[in-house]
Image 1 (cartoon, rainbow, N blue to C red):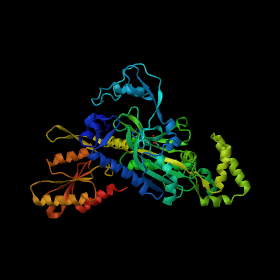
Image 2: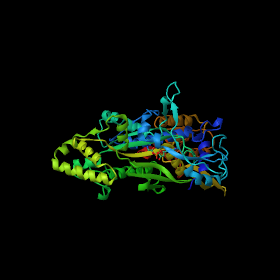
Image 3: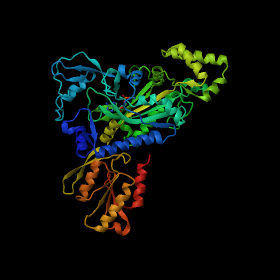
Image 4: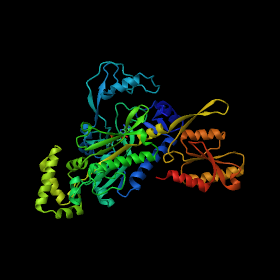
Length: 523
Ligand code: GAP
């Protein structure tokens, strides 16, 4: 079904997925807290990403860096100078808005107002008055490090996790014993002082990212090594294992396919997301390609995550600003270059210079780059799959939310609200219910089964209310299985397993249930 954002937000509040931050003081726009079910869902999304992108591979290493870093990082990355949105203010009502979002703000205002906009937070409706000239507004949150509030001590909360990966590239390269092509992954908080945070947790001021920087050889190095570069036009199998002859465009497509595979595995059907290839005039100047994976949210089609081919821009910028070489040494490349005579090297350098010039780059720099390549040295290029945890959680909630109309058995209708999460991300995997409270044998064996299950997965114990009510409570939490222990259990060791989606019930043993559950949880 097409989920309604208000119904989802209300379920999230009611069932303890998501609350307004600082709610007892009126809340803070753009800040959200995750309750008992929300933090389990979040943990599962992050663990699934980590398993798929890091532990499940042998060419990716992890990193957990600080949120506040040396401010020069943001100068080198370009965030200090260009990470800004155009901001405008109404001269009459003083509402601040993103100049590029006026249309959608006006459309949203036509809807009935929501009760929760706290006063004094710039969240009043726009009166339609005259606007000031748009001005760039830098989205980074500033802070001061140390006891002296002086401009020289200003630092920033990171607006993305990616830059720490570039700043630590050499350390990870030297200590992880990995050679290019390889990746560094990080999950963690990012902060953006968004002018208009909106659409529940879709655009927040504090959120989490899951980013991979996958470092590859420049195509010119691949050509020296293997005598050819495989491009997309050669029809490589981008679903199979990576190949050393791949050029940047094949690596980029490979990661687009990997990301789509991940999204399918955690419960977003392929027909609900769309691959948007940015047009050449939409690309950042250093980017060679960028794909947004978009999802049909209830408020429209919006970016879920992005996969960018960023050339050697980031590492080269840090090399320039830090004065530290970001080049790696590739023994194989040096040996391959040694087999080229002077004429072959000159022809290679001339061809490279001509190609770089066509891309608006300097021919002299191309020749210097080739001279380094012949010595086995280069600054790696990077492919960056970058995802937002909160945004993915919202997509999963929208995808999972369902209101199913059932016969109530008395000739009427009954609506069942159910979150049809994939078991891989479901906050609670299994709930255990003793059918009756007053039978010590049933209680004891149910407690025993619950005790064994909770050591393996997040399990939930519920003894209160009719069994039907208990099932419905778990449907709303998205729990895939409910185990009901009854009088037969002490006799033959079987219990009833009720499936959330079909509501079908089947008797099975503990071992049979474990096998069923593990099969559904495995990546
Ligand atoms: N390092 C690249 C980068 O940060 P981005 O497109 O600005 O790229 C990547 O952000 C992802 O982070 C987005 O696709 C989105 O999922 C998430 N994201 C960005 N800004 C966000 C915000 N204000 N609130 C929630 N998620 C956000």
